[in-house]
Each structure stands twice: as C-alpha cells, then as structure tokens.
View 1 (cartoon, helix red, strand yellow):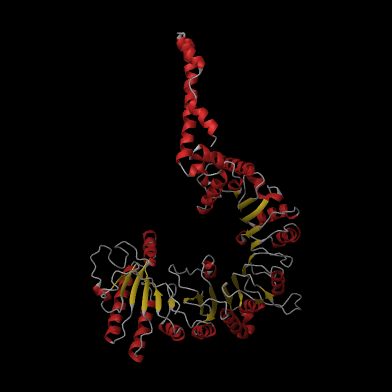
View 2: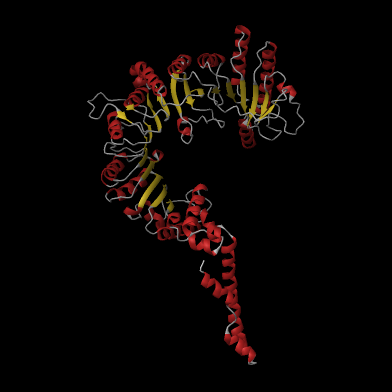
Length: 631
C-alpha cells in the first residue's frame, strides 16, 4: 500500500472552483456543472477509500499478487475449472482480484477446442449454432492473447463436419514452440489432418501428447502412422508423456518417456511386436507409467530379437497390460528391477491361435507375478478382491472370466467391475497386483488355486466379494487357500451371501471351526438399484431391498448357531447404508432394538462405524473394520 497516495486521498477536499462559486454567490448555471463534477469525483474517491479499507481489514486482500496467483491457480485446478473457465468468477469479486487474475497467463493457457460442439444439439437453429461457434472462436483467441508466451495445454474433440469459422481449429493453430500439452480425441480423418499439420514442425516445448483415434469412424492407419512417425522421431525432442489409442506408429525411436500408454485393439496384421516394445522401453529407463492393450491376435515373434531380452524398470510405478497369455507372459518376464510397490494389473486372454503356448505361458505368468510380489520391497498383501462371471455368448463354448487383485489394504469404496476392470484402479494410492483371465467353464477352480498358491497371500485378512457371484465350491477354494482371512465384504442382496453361509455352516458343523470373524455388508448397491428402478422400473429387480434384509436375517441366524456352538462371530457390519426407509437395511428413526442384532456376536453389531454391543466397554465406540494393524 502506498502510504503517500492513501494520505493524499484522505486529505482531499472539494475543488477550489466550487468553493469560490458558492462563496461568490454565482448563478445556478455556474455552480451546477462544478457540483456535478464534484459528485463524480467524490464517488471515485469513496470507491478508492473502500479499496484501502479492504486492504487494511482483509488478510487475503493484503497478499502479494504472486501469492494470489498461486491461490487462484490451485483453486481452478482443484475445481476442475481450468478448461471451462469457471474460475473467471474470481474476476467479479473485487477490482484487485480482477486486476491480478486477468494477467495470470497460466490460467488462460488451458484451451478447450470442440470442432463441432453443436453436433448433438439437434434442436439448435442454424443461426444459433453459428453464433455459438463465433463465441467459441472469440473465447479461444482471447485466451491465446492473454496467455501470451505461456506454454499452452490444449484439449481437442474432432468429430463431424465443423463450421467454416472453426475449420482452422481442426489442424495446428498454435505456434509450435508454445505447445506444452495436447490431448486429442476424434475421427481418424481429423486426427490424420492434425498430425500431418504438426509433423514437419519442431514442437520443442511439447511434454504431453495424447491421441485417441475413434475406430468406430473407420481407419486411416497408414497415413496417420507415417506423419506420426516423423513427429515422434524428429520434432518432439522433449516429449515425456505419450498416449496413443487405435494408432500405430514406430515406437522404437521413443526415448526418455515417463508415461507410455498404448491401446490398439484393431484386429489387423499391423501391430506392435514384442521386440519393438522392449526396444522402446530400453530407451525409457525412467518410465513411471506403462499401459498397453494389444489385439487378441498378438503373439511374440520368433524372428531374431535385435533389442535387449530384458529391460530394467527401476522407476516404474504403474503397469497395466492386456493381450494374449503368451504376449503378457513374455513381456512381463522381460521387465526387471520393477519396484515392489508398483501397481500391476494384467489381463491375459486365451486366444485360439495362442492355445499351443498357453499351457506353459500361463503358469509362467502366474509364477512371475508371484515372484515379483514376494520381493523384499513389496508391501504385504492385506486384502484380496475377486471377480467372476460367465462370458459365454451366442451359444459358444462356455467360458468364465476370473479376476483377482491383491491389495496393500482393503478399500472401503471397493472397486467397479467393468469390462476393462483393470483401468479402474489407476488413481488408488495403495499398491496392488491383479490378474484377469478367461478360462473354459469348469476349470476356474484349478486356475484359482494356481494363482492363490503362487502369490504371497498368506497374510491377507480381508476377502472382497462385492462384485462377484460365486458358488459355494468356488468360495471354499478361496477360504481354504486364504488362511489368514478374518473378514468378508459382500453386497447384501447378492447370491454370494447364500454361498457364504453354506460354506460357513459346513466348516462349523463338519469341522467345528469358525473361519470368518467378521462379515461386512456394503449397502451402497441398494441405493443404485433403487435409483435405476425409478427410471427403468421394469428392468430392475424390485426385491433387492427385501433380499438384502432377508440375507441379513439369515446371517444373524447363522450367528446364533455359531454362538450356540461356542464360536461366535466378532462382528456383523453395515456400511454405506442409505438413510432412507425405502432402501436402507436398518431403520434410521432411532427406534431399533440393537440387542436383537448384537446378542449372538462377541463384540457387537457395527452400523456406519458405530459399534452396538452388550459389552459396556465397547458399546458406542468407533470401529473401523478396514483398518489393518500389523501384528
């Protein structure tokens, strides 16, 4: 704050000409213009006094512009508002924030470009679409101007036929040296045009390149590949993060990357060979993230390999791969010195052309993954999550899809079970190792036993069954091999609950054993099913809520039997219970008699973290069943 300017502002009085006119008894016509000018000046003076007052009263107002700039950027980044410019509401707070924010080049450097953002607006009139396109163009150019020389981060969507005013934005519209990050998804023809426009120009500041060619709109692989080869080989010397989807190129010249993601599922002869992948990895010794999805006709070649047969990956933190069993096995075994804390997920599919090598490749893959996780630097596996579903289609050979993930600690939120389940784990902090594979129906148990016995799972205390439907036989295999398991997590409306109770009763009656101490019901699925029922009432099961409560009662009946045998369970727990009577598992009106739920349990009944118990020292305490304590 400028003290001299502040003092002068406070000491300001009316203009001498106005005072002289009043003292001299001048006519109204003489005084009025001077009075109008004084009112205007006084208004400006009051506004400036208010700014000084804010500066003295507000700690935030006193911050230096550099600090405010950092705060604004963190706010915009944290709210996901960098590309849609929602952060510009900060400009409206006060004059000082406006003056600071409008000059922060980094905030203006995130450009969102949709070449045809009105394609889905079938209700829009032509002139409305043109008006919106013109507004988009003004916004893009204003951002480029305000970003100045700051490196640009650009997201592009290239679909449909763009309006003439936007056609220039389907190819390179930036200064090559100013581009830091480019993320593109679009039709192959548009992606080809863009890559061609970039290929011959040096993009010396480009650090991140993401290209997703939507294969549903046809392919132009050869044309795109030729231009992409030139760009990657000659004109992106500082590239550190590369992601390609449905695009083929020569990856052997790649060097010093930190991230390499390749998704190539098109069933064509042109594909990434194992030796080329290894050659690329050998030139990226500091690679941190490696994801690769290859088509189901991929297999290691028998030609002489010119690249190293193994590659040290001492910085690798995330490894996802999806391909045939033989390709996954050979590629996994080629990677050495991978940190034990790395996140690893492999989807290995048995393809018909791969059957001759599967007999040896699959056991080798399982053993290699188990050996990796058994290293001294690998965290202990405390939780095992499984998926299992039938994948038989159109009367084909019955097959099963089996997935198993060993986690550093159990996840309260669980995981989703999509068709490409492996990529759902990307943002988890905990270390894990997982394998998904397809097997002929009837041999799932044998495959499961091989995995369980090859991996270091002897200290896994939690078994997550939330996203699977398993039989009693399958569950028996799991519990027989996961000897340290104390806690099972399951969806309350799942048929797996019945299978679990069958197995637990068999252990209790036939062997006099209590193999499980805690059962956790994750009730979040009930709210999702209820919400779907509001939209598609005829396609959902209205009995999910009733089935969940029925399974809870059946579980409590087993608890009574176990308590009578002198081997009571420690706890039954409900998490994520919707607070609504129409789909909640426990009444939320406070009138429930908890003793009916905990009377046959050693510790008590846990509901949303609160333990209800007949023991006075435990009743009302907090219980976190997902916490893992090293013993």
